[in-house]
Amino acid sequence: MVRKIILILGLFYFYNELNALEPKFFLSDKLDSITNSFTQASNQYELSEDIPSSFHKKRVRPQRIDRGIMQSVFIPKGQWMAGGTVSYSEHEENNLNFLVIKNVEGLGYTFNVSPYIGYFFKDNVSAGFRFGYNRTYLDMANFELNLGEDFNISLKDLYYLEHQYEVSGFLRTYMPIGRSKIFGLFNEVRLTYGYGVGKNSTGSGTEYDGTFETSHNLQIGIAPGLTAFVTDWSAVEVSVGVMGYNFKWQNQKTNQIETGMRRTSSGNFKINLFSINIGMTFYL
Image (cartoon, rainbow, N blue to C red; front, side):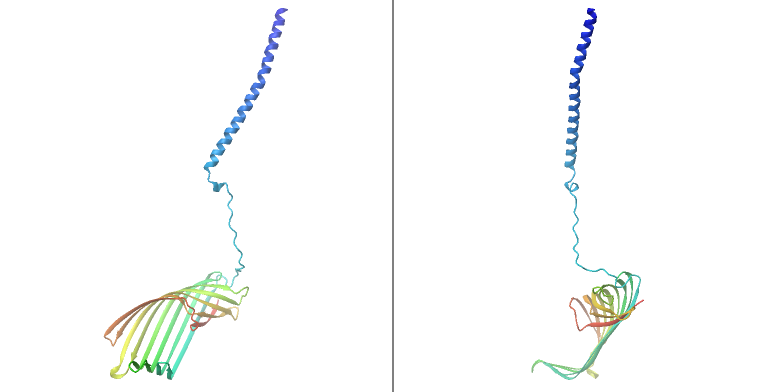
């Protein structure tokens, strides 16, 4: 009987000890879980410091300003264009006196024709070739320059004639005026090579003095203009002279004996209202 009582008391004591230890094991597990979470958070923070700050910030793209410029098709892709420009000017003087210029008698003209052909490889943008011919003629029977009693210049039978041939490649872009399908602006970028021959002379008989000349010309420039459709497939164009850079080489031979040369380069970005070309273009 005593043994049974002692055994029951021992089991009861052991049971109480287990109950006393259970909260300690539970608290230890909680502490381990909190420690692990804190360690992981610390590792993540250290890793985030190595990443550039630009990855944490959301990039904001700047907004484009709407300027109200309309993008519309004026000449569609796939069309051919063919046309040309013509210009002509003439002058005549008969006993003209102007300031120090006296007794001028002369006649002259300048004629220029330039056909071209192009293809629209993109809406409103075309590329092509242009060919040109220019003829300049001057026949001045008398010319006097009077700068005083001790300085007078008198020229008689002054003659000048030049032929010039040109070939150029161009890139032309069109822009309609507002929503119009009839009126538009264009700008043409050109690369031109020209070859010319000419002669000039003064005097006659034993006092004749003549010079033969050849020239090479390279030009890089732009030619803006205005176009207006008169039918669905044809338009009238008005353009100003080419503005840009010009390089020219000239070789001369005087009286079949003396030789000379001249090289010039110039840049011109002024609009010359006296050099306006009128042309006709057909769209196929």
